[in-house]
Image (cartoon, rainbow, N blue to C red):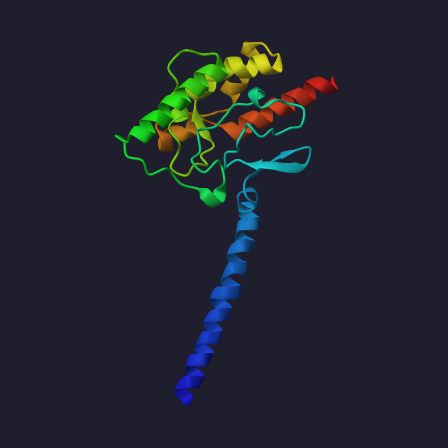
Amino acid sequence: MKTLRTAFQMLLLLTVITGVVYPLLVTGLAQLFFPAQANGSLLYRNGKPVASVLLAQNMTQNMSQNQKESGYFWPRPSVGNFDAMASGGSNYGQTSPALMQQWQERIQYWQQASGNTKPVPAELIQASASGLDPQISVAAAYYQLNRVAQSRGWPEKRVAAMIEQQIDRSSWFAAGAPMINVMSLNLSLDQQDTLHASR
């Protein structure tokens, strides 16, 4: 009985420490020192959360009610259609005929949608491993510049300036090149529309 009582006391003690005290401590410290990250790194429009800086969204589903999807920059393709529950890649090998066909279809789609016959940047053709990657290269953003500018009725220089403002040069260390967060860039486009409308 003494051994059983000691084992039960240890179970109770460890349950309290690892199941209550530790989670509360970590959550409290995270909220104190990293509140934005602890709450999902959310992006807000008019005080309401509309996206996370960590996750790409399907931009064919409008972020705002009065803007066509062509007025946004699109992220990399997603095998799981940007569903976090279906996150992952296709597992096709590099020599897979199905993968080659998929890439060809995406090339045609991008060239048609953007009205651009130049070579499509690789990450716009190849899905990310997670299918939720919000980052694209500067070249991928500029590839979409004409489509976004025309859809919004903006001069291309204005859109190009916003691209330049959103370049994350610190990502060079992780990605090997400066990158742009698509969600942040798209939200900045909407904010510019709001500012312009309020003037």
